[in-house]
Length: 88
Image 1 (spheres, rainbow, N blue to C red):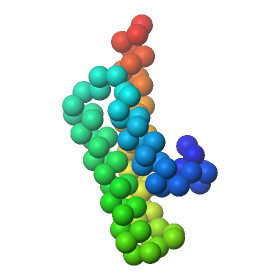
Image 2: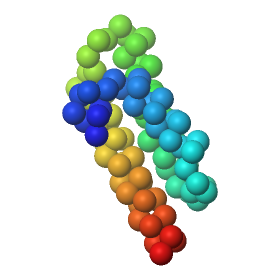
Image 3: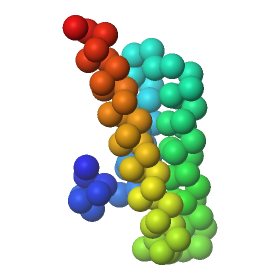
Image 4: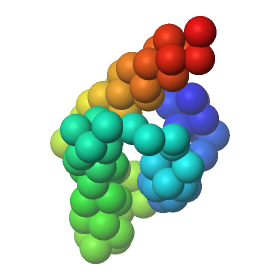
């Protein structure tokens, strides 16, 4: 939510998501691959912006980031539901 509300940077979001992936308990490999793919999109967009010296994301970069963040949110909700079901 912090990234969506512009209270944290893209770089911080990338680092936080990487840490989150490391602490999640036993997600399926398919889920991890989907998460890493979306996380990788964020890394690429960030790297391209840095390489170009952009302080603000291009419209294309912003769109890619928004899509990746939405997909990550969906993946996290899916994992959350699965964890809640297994703890009942």
